Length: 157
Image (cartoon, rainbow, N blue to C red):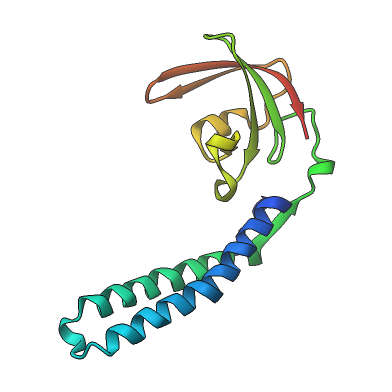
């Protein structure tokens, strides 16, 4: 029951780099912390040892998550993305119908989302609302802070 995870090439490479760091320098850093804590003596009341073991557990869990994601990843060929509708990897240029402001978002998966860089997740309410929509469509999105209304001006790669 494997589920494909769609990533851009950039997102895939970023996750690979993060995995390499966790398996390399982060593991070494944690091993050094564990060794220092062991040298302090009694492990039953050693907060430094407990902290290092917790960090090791979190690191190994993240390594496992990344390995699974990368194993199930399908890289989206951004050059072949259709521009008739908004899909993963597409850039969607919008007009905010309340402020009149133009905004451009790139639709990405949760692992690549970075609002500051204009990348919104397709699993977010806003990203989900644009999926499958065409140029010229008006999209109304209910969010906790109210209602957003956008008109899709353009869809590109």
